[in-house]
Image (cartoon, rainbow, N blue to C red; front, side, top):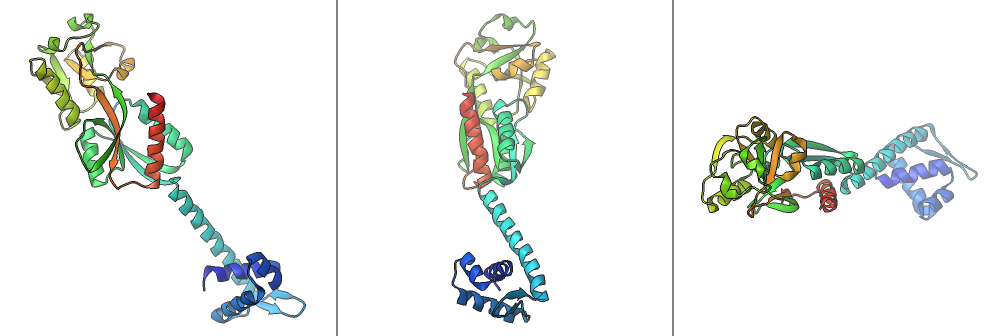
Length: 294
């Protein structure tokens, strides 16, 4: 028995006329009659009472037609689910993101949820270093990371670039500068993220300081920007950050650096060869939002 047999059965049952059912199915009548007879033989019951004047369903036929309707309805549902899944409209996506505020991430999640309500997003907060490891191992499918990253197993799409600024406690002597000279940071105590959090940016910052003639004096290591700026606010040191964070911390002074400093560059990352319809749809929204924000 095949699905076409059920469709033939339903058509004849609804038309109660083999000729009209054949026209509806776009086949000739003799093959339709033959298929119905084969179905009756396979089931071992008579589905229709046939006379020269009419065609009527038997009791067994009525039962089988009712079941056939349910099967065909379920098949149609499966087809619709498969079509939606192939377009990325339903499914699950695990997303990695750093702590703190990321306007592209926020706008992407909002827009994606509006367009694809059938997709469940699992958001996991983790550092860039943890995201790289999680992408390799398949624990997340896409991540919002800080560049540079040197990993040939990942595809990296830059989405935003910001200058490197320094965060100072209110009343700090360096706050009088409109732009802080990098060399002036030589004797300062710093709160910095561990290298494992964002290895590339960590290396760029320490190289900048060495080029200015000093090694960065790190007194505290924290793994997220909120903890870092909390310590700055408490007067325990200075921190490097992106300027976009400054609007949320009114009692901290934020200043750009005088000399050229490595930018903070953000990217969306995903594993090479690991794309899916849901991921493609998500990346499409990321690109659209990133383009609008630049």
